[in-house]
Image 1 (cartoon, rainbow, N blue to C red):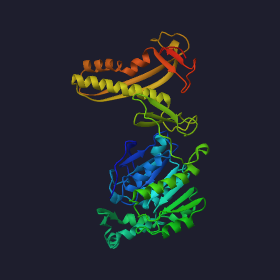
Image 2 (image 1 turned 90 degrees about the horizontal axis):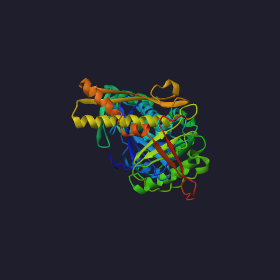
Image 3 (image 1 turned 30 degrees about the horizontal axis):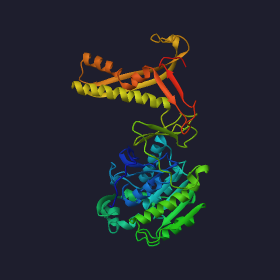
Image 4 (image 1 turned 45 degrees about the horizontal axis):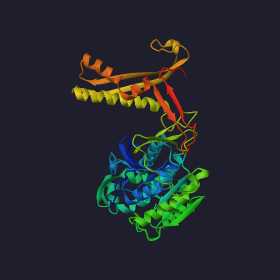
Length: 435
């Protein structure tokens, strides 16, 4: 199947699918903080790298939309056996992908599905409560449409229980459970009860999934709904102009539903200069009252307050602080062990932050008020003797982040764009100072 490689602004992911197998995914990110998140479902037996998925996802990032695309179980780079999958498992994979987005950043407010992936997002929408808009591209009105590609193998599948079928130049094993599953799908009822805005895009000359499918989907759905003809495009949108057009129309349409009211227009997000090396940028991402997007070079992660204060869409600020200390501890120990050529197999660091009364802290100079306490438990796996373990524990206290937290730290805060006097606030703090 034709595909394109990822750009530098994509993040590779892996998460467990509906059958427990690891699913390979790419998160295409805009240059600035995303204004919304979308989930893209690819066509039958395709992969996340197919032209339509790759080009549309990347084009949407120019409008501030981050897009997660992944390989369904048994396809592309994902694990599992395709022969054990069916339409229901594809729906469940989509829900698992949405759960992963929700836990790391924010749940998808837009679902996009190409071909059978379009039928899948129509079926999955009601299981992802944050979805506000659904877009289909060349989608069949009923998933059973896919059986037309099985040709003479369908009879063998029904009689023998399974058969090998060549699709797109590759051989797949299709089992009877697949046929039984798609035959039992209440797709028309799902479309009728969709409950979100719907955009149906289809080429009038689509030779794989006829345009009459778009008519059935559109007629079955309730308003708000829209139809856009991808005139002259083939089913896979192999021409770049066709996928770019689809993405531009999709972004303009979706902006009415998935962006906050004050940023509802789907205009390309302004390009920002790349951050200097070592600079970490934190910006609100629109998830609940306190959701944040943290950007460190090419790496992006979320932060939030736990429920009920926040939406719990990412680690809390203190979680990130502990993560920094834990990562630094493990790395420092590993570097030392490698230099000494000691048989250290694995380092595990568990941390907890609390506030305690100063009078309860025997090792603290401060005797009044409260002090911050970080409990750190380090585990070393490997054939190490007692002397080596004690030395590694000493090295753990020498990691740079540990030293930063336990020595005087100066935080200089300025107001961006303000060159007037008095805008800088400098605070020198001791790690054990009362708060």
